Length: 316
Image (cartoon, rainbow, N blue to C red; front, top):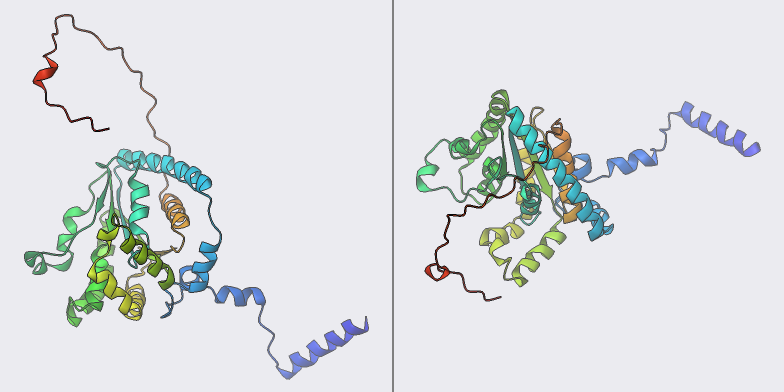
């Protein structure tokens, strides 16, 4: 009781003296979260906070559980696809982020079970000399969806705010013009009935280095590395600053950026797909199972000799 009274008196005296309260630990922990979780800017050491990356990667996701969860989500993606087709929706999903952040692997899992006529991927290469003279957004417009389609952009018009700006492939005036006009361009897309969803995949520099080294060691993945990717390692801070500036202008209310913490690839895939499904309200319009009719044999049909056909050699 004596201790309690003393503590109460101490608090009262501190309050009268104007001494501020000690910060709440819970609030302090929240404010210390990295940009991938709390929206702060990138540091020069990490794309979205090394601590968040370690925390995410520390808890391993077992392969069996991952495959089970992915299978469930892919069933839901099929339902979403059917809803988009039946309701005539126009959906654009942009995937941006650091090199080797896992954008392609997420896109692969999204499209794995879907109809390529409804859900297609757009991954444009270097612009041609003719395209360089066009209005900047012009080369992307023909790839926008019609009714009943979903388009996944593996890199997009945001190249201008990232690689083109950092590596000097555009002038300062072209860069500034992009930052001015991009929000208006996206609002125009939204007003035309297109649902625009933007993802930024955030990866730490340590994890990026691990993935780069893995690509160098694996001949089947070496094609993924380009001189531009290697140069991005030297300009890590410049890319961080470019990303911060891009978010400042283009993280708009109508089409906000959603950051995916991607140090753990499996978790990033599941988190991104789950979030994508949550953004579009849909119902299960999966067609009922069809009945397979019996094959009708035609007695008059005579099959040509097998020797008249050229077969692929059976090596296996």
